[in-house]
Length: 141
Image 1 (spheres, one colour):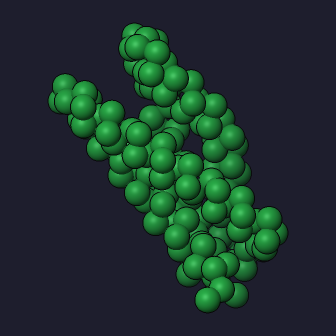
Image 2: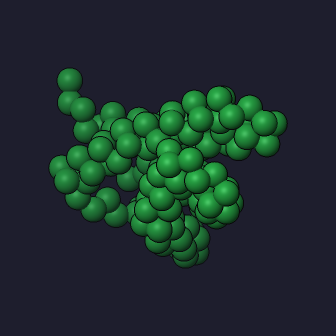
């Protein structure tokens, strides 16, 4: 079985799972459930790491995938894609710093940075799924 065609939908599933775990982690910490929060966030980090491995492998094999949509939707798609790519590059070190602060027990600083990391991580995960749907389903070649 060829793995390449299975990767894009798997990436969308991993992004959905990452967003779900980050959201659940937020809900749990707001409720004071630190153990569940930690479990969710370690899960989100794990899922995101698996995502990155498959994402890099896929694009190393396939390269650039042109967007097939025509007309004004291209402005929407490329605006979404640009914000997704820029914020994905920014959120990676933010996630690592935020997680590192939690591991080091520096929860005050962790909380201050997490207030920025959380919405960006959610945005990147959710827009990744939207980009997949637009590229591979709504405007597929």
